[in-house]
Length: 128
Image (cartoon, rainbow, N blue to C red; front, side, top):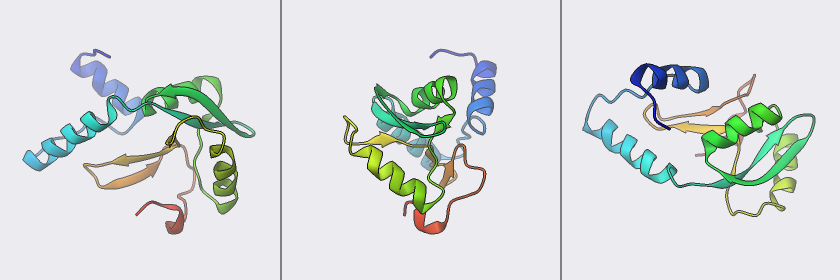
């Protein structure tokens, strides 16, 4: 998706936090690695509304977020063991080995964030 710098900044602020800041060569290498790893990734995903909905479309994480927000509520956030069990049950029906959820890793900040969670999940539900 082609955007001017201002359009890109607006998009990032509306959908994430902001544009990435590259302060040194390590930041640049991390950013390149992330872009290269994610540009072709295409997975099924789980949206939520009143229930969990497995979407059998292969989309990028950003496309999956957009799809869920336009058609349901958002990608699912696993903020309890009950939700974790429900997600596990739904994942058995997925057509891909990996499935997008609402968890997003911001490599430059070394931070995992649930995109739509009101309350942060417990430490035991976060990846290590």
